[in-house]
Amino acid sequence: MATYKDGVRAAQTGLLMDGLNEELKISKGHARHACGVNMRPRWLSNNVFFLGLTSLCSDTNHEMVTAVLPLFITLELGAGPGVLGLIEGLSDGASSFIKSFSGYLSDRIGRRKPIIDLGYLLTGLTMPIIGLTTSWVQVLLLRLLGWAGRGARGPPRDALLTESTTQDSMGKAFGFERAMDTIGATIGPGLALVLVTYLGYRQVFMISLIPGLAAVMVVVFFVKEVKACSASKSTNTKLRARVGYLSALRSLPKPFKSYLLAVGVFGLGNFANSLFTLRAQEVLAPILGAGRAAVVAVGLYTLLNLVYAACSVPAGALSDRVGRRRVLASGYFISSVTCLLTAFLTGDMLILIITFVSAGFFTAITDTVERAAAADFLPAEMKGIGFGALHTINGIGDFISSTAVGVLWTFTSPFMAFGYAAFLSAMGGMLLLRLSMA
Image (cartoon, rainbow, N blue to C red; front, top):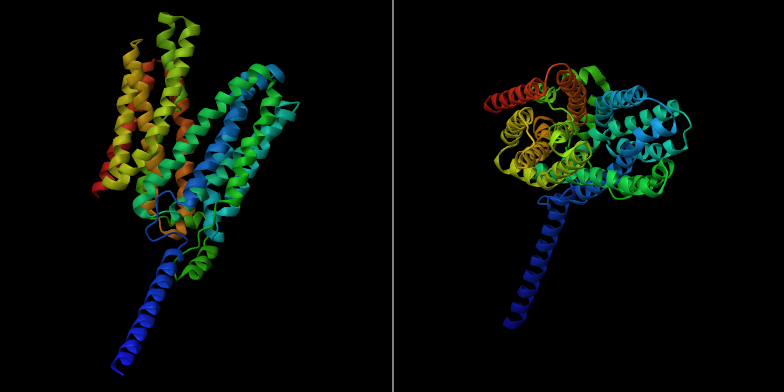
């Protein structure tokens, strides 16, 4: 009889343990999926990976078009440089204008994916259709539409990235997306350069449809919406619906506004990296001749992009470990030193290589960590409009900085042009350090 009782007790104990194990499994499952992300996920979650892959395909698509667009407009359509400048300027303006509002809209509707999907669809389809145009006005309209889609998708995508990973892995997630984007930006012009040797410009545009559609397929079918994990989600949605666009901008956290000031000051001096290439060509031309100097300058620009792609994830990982604002400030100071090197640049190949490696390194830091650091200031219900404001500030800075450096270079000297950029980069770094100590 004792054996029987022992058996019953053992069976009861076994059933109890099985039940507890099942409860633990269920609890862990709920905890893992309550926010759409694992409690302890690998930093490279499905969304992070597929958003990176989408960026690679999309950048390949529109960089193929961008690489041959100047030649198509001038040689095929017979328009001049002024028309090209008008198309690029209006397109960038449209992109910057729509960024802030698209982020706000994603906050208001409580969903990121519809805007992201539409943005990638617009860019992926309109760029190849340029190959069917017969006038520069048609090119302008298609470029405006494509760049509006490019601008619209950015802030909701960044918000979705923050929702698809953990706080301590955000730097790596943004670094991965930036690295994939840069790889696509390198593949696109390379493909265009090879194809244009054998095909016409219009055929190159049409072939760009392949990576464009690939980007759309990946983002539509593999990137998933992340459900809000706040218990007050419905309340936040109702509040968002009552807040207008301007009111939402005004209600952004004060520390975030201070952060935008530091980013904006740096942005006023953060000119397009193509100006590094132009400066290298200028100092090399008297030594190598114009043709060879151009080839070497393009090679140095390729080196810059390779360093950018290689350092994006490590820069993000470092920011996760030691603090994003400190890493970003160091990136701003490295930018300042690089601009000073560029101001005094000579034809010494070692100095040229150091300058371009440094440029790739600081670009990896700033492009990656600026967005990861922004997420630290923003509550969940304001991430869309917050990232939109950040993108808009950067867009305005890109336009002003490249224009200012170009004008100073033309009418004064390279020293004044790159000295201006070095000063503003250092000022942005000091403002950021002050914010970190506050």
